[in-house]
Amino acid sequence: MGLNDTPNSERIHIGLFGRRNVGKSSLINAITGQSLAVVSDVAGTTTDPVSKAMELLPLGPVLITDTAGLDDEGELGGLRVDKSYRVLAKTDIALVVTDGSSDGGYDGEIVKRLKERDIPYIIVHNKSDLSEKETPTAENEIYVSALTGKNIYELKELMAKLLDSGDSGRRICADLLKPNDTAVLVVPIDSAAPKGRLILPQQQTIRDILEAGAVAAVCRDTELTAALSRLGGKPRLVITDSQAFKRVAKEVPEDIPLTSFSILFARYKGGLEFYVRGVTALGKLQDGDRVLISEGCTHHRQCDDIGTVKLPAWIREFTGKNVEFEFTSGGEFPQKPDKYSLIVHCGGCTLNEREMKYRRECAAAAGVPMTNYGIAIAYMNGILKRSIEPLGIGSLLERHMNK
Image (cartoon, rainbow, N blue to C red; front, side, top):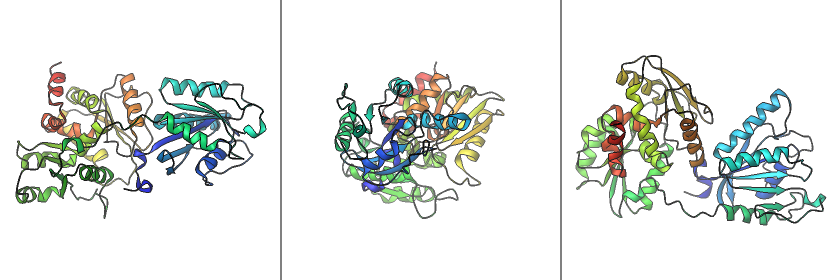
């Protein structure tokens, strides 16, 4: 996968924040060397967060987001400011842009929020060509000029330095495999499957398997038994789309490790144990309880859509209760989800790690249990323990069921 093909969820997310007319859009153009953002002397030109994916050396693949001014006014301006702050949920590094004329109020508020969320940031004093001040007072402070290009290279180097935390070591499944192992991927092709291509988590998993020096064997659920018989030996791991969990679990012998794409992505995004703890709330739902089903992506809903059709039906059947459902998709997620008895989230393949962490923190702060599609489906089919055993936490479910 080339840098230009890197999914946004795997890119470094850079957010620019500041008051109106401090030169955020001009700074983006200077950093990227391209005219990506509309520049104007009129305050409030940027009205909504605008993101652009690109390669930015020495950082690599990034997603740069320009936000509306934090001092925007009026009712509509307040909504724009709220959208700007929402960008923090997925920001890996923030550039707090000022032109030296600020009284510190708006800049101080954004810095406060960045510190609360432990987001690294740089105070960028733009328009230094118009100011006599040039000496930073902190390591994360720099004077630049988007107009002349002064210290733009140094700013990019400083961003790379703040983010130089090394490889996290997290893999989708490569750490579960050895060279020449075989992993079987079960990919149902139904009306909800995109025509002519595999979905993102399937693509990323195949790539991770190949990077481990292992072999990826891909088949539909309808050909699984035949595929297993032709391998000439047991696969090291079977990974299935969660919708086919029930059928696949019956066809895959117990001595072959089995899990799902959704469960692997729960681990990859850092929330596996949190979701396993939350899934037991399914057995406690009562009539009238509200369940939020949230997806990170937006797509055209089909008649057998998993989030809006299949999961609600399976949950009602499993609980025997008249549960109410609400749905969100894309960037929408409630900051205070306290009205829900449970949140069931997708695997989050289109969301970066920081945004998934933010959503879990929102749920935890509200005291609302949260799980994900694959874990919920495996739990309702009585195969969750088997499905998480390959990941080394098989005993975790039993501990929480006994509480």
